[in-house]
Each structure stands twice: as structure tokens, then as C-alpha cells.
Length: 454
Ligand SMILES: [Fe+2]
Picture 1 (spheres, rainbow, N blue to C red):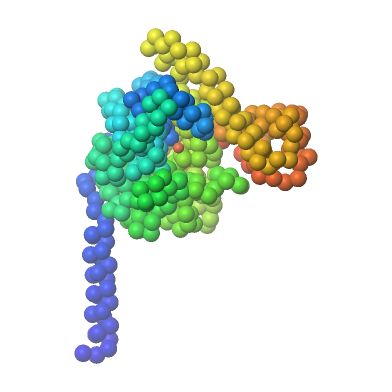
Picture 2 (picture 1 turned 120 degrees about the vertical axis):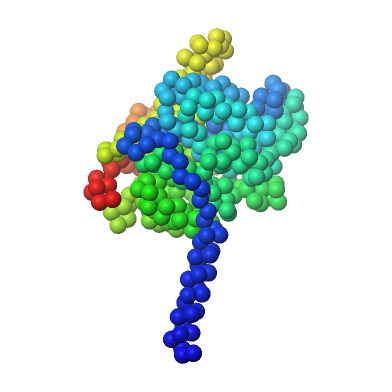
């Protein structure tokens, strides 16, 4: 046997191994898209609903401390806010509702079971529902019962239980599931497929006795994504990706544990698959960023947390031959309260209650941080905390630059401007660096040349 023959046999074996590997790693079911090609598609994105079962807490000290030392989430009203959101779904009839992770407070099994029941209500309306996990949802050692002044550890769920509990909301009907994570490919329509990516890192939560906040997409998952991209291309479908963590940095300063590790690899893989839009949550900030390379632009649209001020969700409308229209809507709590004869004033005036709650949390957090810097007098610390808490209301709701200029004349802002650089000053000033003034709306035109050449 000559060298050429041996080389050819070796090459064939390598190719065969590659093919077998491909079959083993990529399995796909039968394609069944209910929304036919050429139709407009409306998608609601409600992220970080952090549902906390009322069975896990009472009105004692333990829960009050947990609530008032948090980040401004209205955990004690998660049920009501989610129900009001469902009423918006009923009234506005989107085709698809997506929840990009942090479905529960701290991964409590009870909260997951209740949340899945709520999703059943949405599905009964004829709406497709898709979920993926966030960093709070799986194997979370922080799941607790709050009774009086006591905290008791309670059950969270495993990744297998997540796929079981949420089987009707993506996992059961997935065209393909990634064998290495809880990622899957959903095909609700012929034109748009959803790449639901599990970026959470829960495998070591038990060992580290706390949930891992950062996220990643492993190289095995990215290989699976490539195969999804090929399948989508063969079927003339566009891929929209959804994941909990950020693909792109949403802040000049705070990105660690928010943006996925090695995001350059993920950006390249997604762009090679023709992904233009990634819908994310996690950072609780309403923010849109884009990245352009080789004339290809990819957008990371981070929708803010459903149960924190301004209690909004995203709405993405795909119009064939035109493009994608993104905007946010605030949950219509007052209508829900009226329809359900609710007498709780906090719920009837949710926007006001939520704004004050969020601002108070910001104020306390920055006052404590200023104490640590110990450079300012008490009056100065109060003025700066007040200014940052007002800035944060706008910033987290998606507003930057000009829309925050009203703050210029406050005492706190003047003090910050006159200060030597410090983390709080830099954070406040970074809100004026963003190129966008309003991150609550976006239009992405479709590349018609690309569509026609298909
Ligand atoms: Fe969250």
C-alpha cells in the first residue's frame, strides 16, 4: 500500500469520525412550525420575574430584612405583577412569550411549581411560551423559608427537574436540545426560530454554597449552536438568540459576572449563524448595545427586571420584508387591580410605590458605600445618595444622556463633579457616556438583498 493510499484511508476515517460525532451530538426532531411564513410575529419578553411563592415567607423580621436589603425587586408582589403581565398578554395577544431566566427568587422548588402553573394560563390563551434558566434558578443553596425572625434552608431544583417542570414551555417540543446544557432550539414559526441558550453555571453551586452569578456558553454548546445555524439556513429561517446573561457589555464599568465569559467566541459563532438579535436579562438594566464586524451587526437587547421599577417588559414585532420593532411596555397594574377588586393601594398605584421602593434601595446602598469611602460630610453623603438614586431611576429604566440632564443642578451632582475620581463618581458620570438617549425602542431593518438572494 503506498503512502497516498494510507493517507486517503486515514482521511476517510477522520471524516467518518467527524460525521459520527456530529450525529451523536446533534439530534433533531420533526419540524413543526405553527406560524406560517410571511406572517407578522409578535414576541413579549418578560425577564427576571423572580417569582417568590408566598408560602415561603410571612410578615416577620427575617423576610422584611431580606426584602429591604435587596436590589429594589418587589419580591412580595411577584405573584400580582406576573398576574397583571398575564392580563396584558390576554389583552394584546402576542404570538410568543419568552422568559429569559431568573424565573424564581432563589430557585425555590415551590416558586418554580407555582410559576409553571402561571405559564399554563398563558399557554391556554393560545400563546407559545419559552423559558430558559437564569443564575438564580437551579441548585440554588440560598433557597429559604422566612418565618418570623428565622431562615430555614429549603429545596431548590436540579437541572433535570427544570427541564421536567418546564417541559411544555420549550423542552418537550424543541427541534433540538443541546446535550451539554439546558439550551434548545424552538421553532414556533417558519420565518423565525429561537435559539434558547442556557448561559447559567449551576454545576458548582452546591460546592461553593451559593449561586454562581457569572455566565458562559461552553465550546460544546457553541458547536451545537453552529449546527442549529446550519439547520436554520437550510430551512430559510432566521435565528433570534435568547439567554440570561449579556452577550455584549452594557456598562463601561460593571461587566464582570454580567457579560458571559469569552464573549468574543460566542459573538463570532452567533454572527456566523446569522443571528442579529440576542434577547437578554440578568443585569436588570434596560439597555441596547450593538457590535459590528464585516458589515454584520449583532444587537444585545437587555430588558429590565419585570418586578423592579419601572416594571416593564419588551415587545418585539417582526414584520416580513421590513424588520424588527422593539419597544417596552409597562405592566398595566391599575387595570388588573380594578378587574380583580384589589384594595391594596401599593398595587393600585404600583408605578409610584415601585419607584419609591427602588429609589430608597439605591439611596441606602450608595449612602453605605459613601460611608466606606469616608471622604464626605453627612450632609454631602445625603445629597450625593439622593442624586444617584434619582439617576438610577432613569438609568435602569433605559434613559441616558440628555434625559438625565435635569440632575445637573442638584447639590449632589455638583459635589460629584468636583470630587477626585472614585467609583461612585465614575458610575454616575458613565450614565452620560451612552450614545443612545432612550433604550426603550429600536428598529432593525431587514437586509432585503440578503432575503431576496435566498
Ligand atoms: Fe435577576
